[in-house]
Amino acid sequence: MKPLTPQELEAKLRAIGAQRYHRLHPFHALLHGGKCTKGQVQAWALNRYYYQAMIPVKDASLIARCEDPALRREWRRRLVDHDGESEGDGGITRWLKLTDGVGLDRDYVVSLAGLLPATRFAVEAYVHFVRDKTLLEAVASSLTELFSPQIISERLEGMLKGYDFVSADTLAYFAKRPPLARRDSDFALDYVKRHAKTPDAQQVVLKALEFKCDVLWAMLDALYHAYVAPKHIPPGAFVPEDGRRSG
Image (cartoon, rainbow, N blue to C red; front, side, top):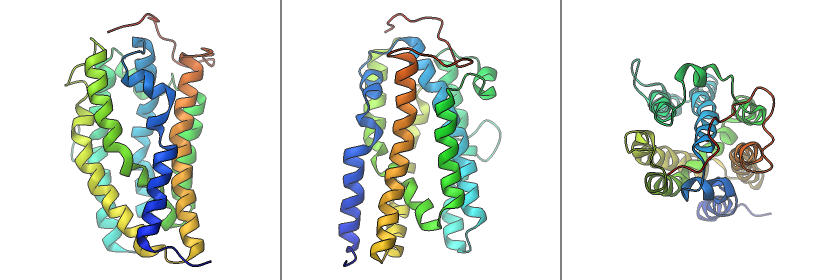
């Protein structure tokens, strides 16, 4: 088997996003279409918090075993983006502003007490993947960021239009994220194209991106099952107070 050219590899990576990225999930169609109840929006924000909170843990595990100082320097910026330079700064804090804005108690969100079990399993699978797989696979798994600007644009427009309990201030996380995602995905894509030279390496890169898409999809499957249909909320998970349509 001949190796793909860098351009062919990029095309295959983008095709994975076109087919498997979670913007295609039915839950996002409801969320962005203004068709969720307030409780469903709360459940999404609460469960997604765990993913956001574990991103720097995932990135720190990559940095910890990286011998290339150039890669460490680049990846370090991701830690700052999410953790901030000081208390009250960074992407995680902005996500908590979102959960505050949709009416969730911050201590409850941070405690993780209301998480769906599938959310915990999916996020921890991603952290373990980045920690245990090769650096090339770990970097490739971040390439879902190639596709995030479109979903963020849809989310901002749809949620501001569809929900009277959501404001631009509530969604500040998303307003700041697109340029950072483009910067990060440009670097990761270039890294993958330069380092995945053999057919075997290229296949593991493609599989890594498929895995990450599966993680994000599984999280939404769990939300849909618990809060949309058939509404089987696992014991101990968040139970919305208001199931009526809002907005």
